[in-house]
Amino acid sequence: MNKLVSVAIVNWNGEKYLYKCIKSLLEQNYKNIEIIIIDNDSTDNSINIIEENFKDEVILFKNKNTGYAGGANKGIELAKGDYIIIANPDIVFGDNYIKNCINKFSEDDTIGAVTGKLLKYDFDTDEKLNVIDSVGIAFNHYRQGIDIGQNEPDEGKYEEDKRVFGVCGAAAVFKRDVLEKIKVNGEYFDNDFFAYKEDIDICWRLNLYGFKCYYVHDAIAYHGRGMNSSKGVINTIKNRRSQSEFLKGISFRNHYLMIMKNETSYAFKKDKSKIYIGAMKYLVFFMVFDWKCLKYVKEVKSKKALMETKRKQILKNINISDEEIYKLFDL
Image 1 (cartoon, rainbow, N blue to C red):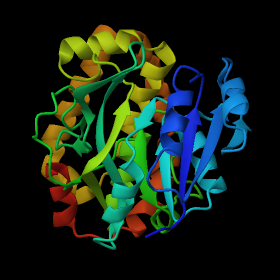
Image 2: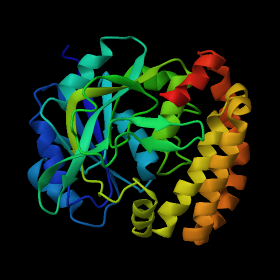
Image 3: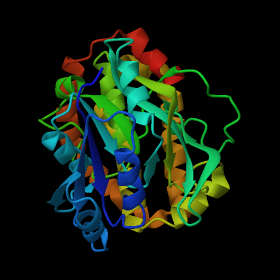
């Protein structure tokens, strides 16, 4: 297989990461790639790094800041490849990442997205860590998204390919024709999300439309996400305190928007009590630790009609049974 693979890096003030990210792509064993940088109006030295070092190797699109979702959509729009990787700039790709991910698609025509094993990378010390960042996303019966394996030492637990609910948006590989089939209102990623939870949202829809997401164990990449991310309440609090009020607020908002968009009646009835418990736990957490973000409840309400319109389109295109939908939350 030697089909063109487009890699779209969505960048905003990523000067610390870009050089290593692009260099790792140029060193891939899979050579038939194009690299597209969508720069979301960076104010740091990102543009200079690209133009001084990789002018002839990348396509640079200077964008207004449309968030991760808008930047990813622009990257897909510009991409010419049969497969499209949407990546953060703080990813360092192992030299077989693209090759091994692309090979997975040939095993099953219904595979729409894959991710490799993402390990931690410390950009301050320039060190690859033997600690897992993500081996895919689980989305449970409480409707809580979890990066599988996060912050666990990589000690052989995840050495087999596996179907997962979703792929981490930091280095997600999509089949182009599947992306075209799951568009809603002409959008691949939901522009109303701006950033956060958009990877779970698109993968939920991908599953509903009858496609699958897979984790590929021998495709290795390294992610600069910090060790405080997600594992345990204390680390979650530490991580959230480092984020801006805006980012915490839209994360809160998007959690409810994606449920409004994608939840089906059958699964909701089966999990009704768990969904309410999950929603209340999420709300209480924000009330205690991020109470200023509760103003984003208004945005949830203001976007309700829009989400309902999108939901109707999604429900018309569901291509799996109610029982299969319910099993997604066990992946």
